[in-house]
Length: 478
Image (cartoon, rainbow, N blue to C red; front, side, top):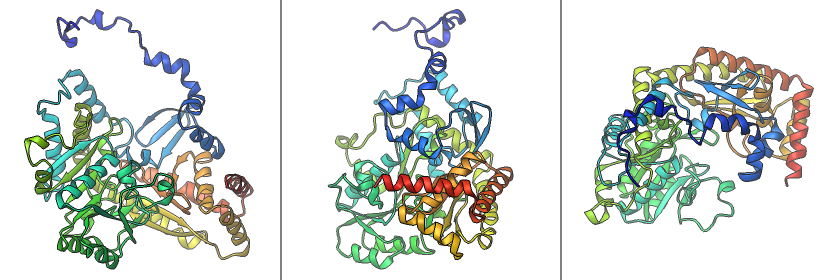
């Protein structure tokens, strides 16, 4: 192929304005309305089916910050943030500009045989927030960050087994699925790696497994995404001491909890003295644009893995360290510093949890509000009054978790607020909004949640009628 005679940036304006064969705007205008049909025909056919069933089959036309707008111009408050990916909200102008800049620079990206500056600069910036760590491997997702940590821990220690906590979620590729503590994700994909689950916070179980002498490390979320359960106070530090005594590694999975989500840069920093040997991050580092994952670790671990020039590519990723992802990550960290995002998330999270916790004595179906920063779990439970208890029992008999779904649906349909049930068979709603929300969004959510709880406790026909629909659906799926 003959190279162009001049860089694209030097071509005339007339040449750049020439029509191209591919027109994304035209394609979306012509075929955007087929979105649900296309998914049904070519992708996961159960997704549109599920969305139609619960009335989540909206058509969102645009988004900015913590809001979506549908085709009729109605706004929706996003309390889900793309499962935590949109830490800065959607389309932050600084991140957008960084991506425009890196594309316009026409960099010689991914040559594979050079050392471009952006990965080094992003690694330097990430490590400045974790000074006990020394090196970074960049991949493309959270599960890839965990896979990297599992491989590095095994190679560095020369041991085969990883410990993990019940109900953990560390990803869905085969290695990370081996340390996924939820059976519904693991079913049908065996055999997996010979890893072992312990109860979250059970130091005795951790020590018993370590005494077998074959444990490479223990991977743990400082706050579990499923159910929003924190590690008990002092557990991470005690676990770290046990692991190091037995020459094993502490691996902190901060894929969802990292980068300010919990009101600290990393969630493990809430406990003084905890210094994991490996830390996994992803999600919010992307700015919501370019997939990126990172595994941070101690110098000796990386030097063992990459022990000679023969092993220079023993662990790599084709798209890892690409310029767009690195630019997005640098922009995200710059915004977080300039806008004091971590402190803001802590303050707004405290306000949200305080307002919600004040509702617990008022509603017998509402049992607990927990979490840290802007990672909040709202748990429902068995009521005391006979009328509500009979309805609760009906739902539980059909499928555990249906009441939480009954709350999520009217929050969207009546109040235009997007939330999620925190896990299969859980009566818990998880709130992980953009870290940029403030008092206005807290007021909107608490007012809407209060209205839904009033409806549930007042015997509101529409809400409980929808519950009957969910019961029928659950029974039909058995």
